Each structure stands twice: as C-alpha cells, then as structure tokens.
Length: 188
Image (tube, one colour):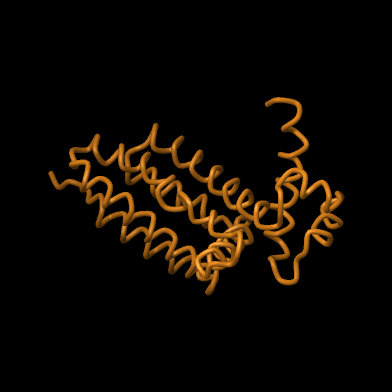
C-alpha cells in the first residue's frame, strides 16, 4: 500500500468501527473526528464530506465481505461456501456492522443528499463471483445472474431480520433451507 494511503485507511477503519458501535444518530464530522482521535479537517481532507465518508464506510465493509466470499467460492462447493459464508455473516461480532450497513443503505435509498453514490454497485459488485460459480455448474449466463441476485437478496433480507430480531437460530434455519433449495443434494 502506498505510504500516503496508510493514514486514510487507518482513519477509515477507525470510523467504520466507531459507526458500527454507535450508529449515525446525531453524528457530525466534528463529533466523529473527536471520537476517532482526529480532526474534522482530516476527515474532509481524506473523504471530502460526511457523505463521501459514508460512501467509503459502506464500500470498505462490503469489500471485506466480498473477499471472504470469493475465498470460499474458490475452495468449496457452492452449498458449502454459502453455509460457511453465512456462519461468517451471523457472527455476533459483526452485528453492529450489519446494523450500520442497513442504516446507511436506507439513507441512500431515501435520497439523502450526497449519499446516493452508496447505491452504485451495492447489488452488482457482489454478483459476479457467485454468477461465475453458477455458470461453472451448468447454468446459462442469464440463469446464473438471476440465481446470484436471488442469493444476495435472500442473504440481505435474512440479515435485516437478524438485526431486527436477533434470532440467529431462526434466520440460520431459513438460510439453510434456502441453500438446500438452491443446491439440492443429488440422490443416488
């Protein structure tokens, strides 16, 4: 990583952790900067605005999740990769990050000025690795793309359920059922 990027990345990581723990209610650049041991000027320097910072927060969290999924897809069957990835996503230590994702996603979907760039790629960026696996298992490009989008939608819906209810056994049972429907075990 180039030297000039290191402070920005450290600052972004601190902001991601802080927002995941405390949420966005009444957050300002000044309060956020103080909480992470920086100044609002440094946040503006690195991210341009509060909205620019929020865009980067979501992108950082999503990039980490895509990297985990890609590593699983390269070594496991689609069903096993999905189950392993789900176990990663429902880890209680990630609950605050998931809550933050939905909070930011909702603001962008409502058109909060400056946040709509959050929506750029929020669905499509994660589809190709899954679609590639689906194509490798004999599905046409169109069907593979649809299956990848369906899987993302179900996972996000169940994660929202988890954030709202904290009922991990129920959402995991639902995800396991979905995975079985998508990738049935062949009968001999």
